[in-house]
Image (cartoon, rainbow, N blue to C red; front, side):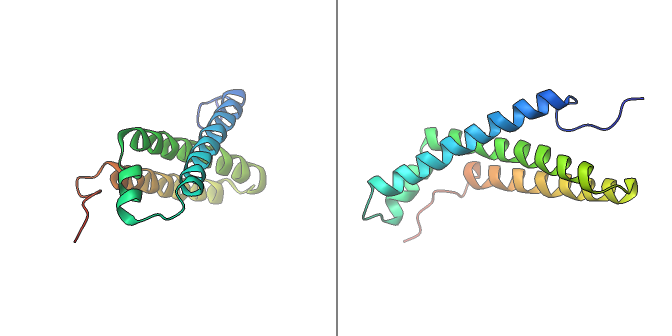
Length: 121
């Protein structure tokens, strides 16, 4: 019988996914910090221009997906290690999956939604 596993169905692949997603999130953080460090006096139009540019939208999309994968592998590991009651663990994992999917779709809507980037005057 095959047991429920993490994101990829293999512990070693989950470990690799966790490391890759961590690198993606680190790169995204460095890009954001670099933008703030090298743009001292920042206004709203500069921020919107930066974050809505195609490269940042793509990097943000990759970062959101990486965050979802990272969260799933991490939380699955914690729950399987520390929650021994299978019914409770299943309920917590279901809640976690729903939350991760909500945040994933919400993040995608923020960066790719039709109303984002419109500057109100």
